[in-house]
Image 1 (cartoon, rainbow, N blue to C red):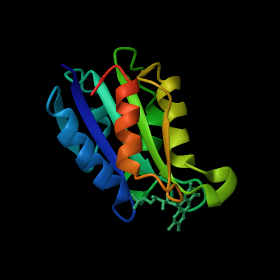
Image 2 (image 1 turned 120 degrees about the vertical axis):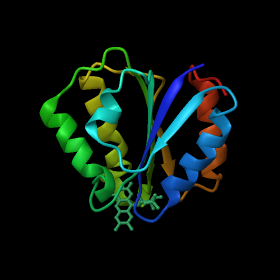
Image 3 (image 1 turned 90 degrees about the vertical axis):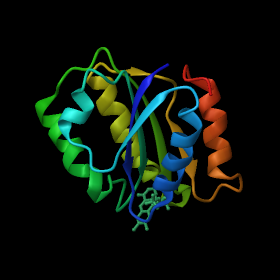
Amino acid sequence: MANIRLVVGTVSGKAQSIADAMTQELSHQHKVVVTAQAVLEDITDEKMDTLLIVCSTTGSGDIPANLVGLFYELRERFPLLPNLQYGVVALGDRSFGDTFCGAGKQWDELLTELTAKPLGSMLALDACDSVDPWTRCQDWLKTTSLNS
Ligand SMILES: Cc1cc2nc3c(=O)[nH]c(=O)nc-3n(C[C@H](O)[C@H](O)[C@H](O)COP(=O)(O)O)c2cc1C
């Protein structure tokens, strides 16, 4: 059983919907704490061994307003997180070109720099995809060590 903290970055609620479904699914096997407005101490909390970031992209490759402060604080304070495993589920839209899933990519890069260990490759969910994002997410979860 993993102790998971799930942190959501969203503008219009799609990432929240995915996070809600993930919470429901993962709660069968793991302890999941969803943090609506996460602060630095939530990320460095050693009671948690797993961090899941579910984050959409806004602007031009940017992190939504509800998570951008945390992102910059982490980057500035740079707490090393060698005991943390993490996964990033990035929401975006391929029609935005180079900035596709830019926010998720920023999280993935930062958490790697902070020496956290990836559960697997970042999942990029494209709003233009004809496949339901939750189906994609379930398939992705199966590829991770969370193995749901
Ligand atoms: C103003 C605006 C800017 C966006 N910019 C990007 C972008 O740069 N890259 C990207 O991949 N998606 C971009 N998107 C698409 C959203 O990330 C995508 O629709 C996502 O599913 C929204 O999730 P949310 O409801 O959780 O915010 C943008 C959407 C809007 C409305």
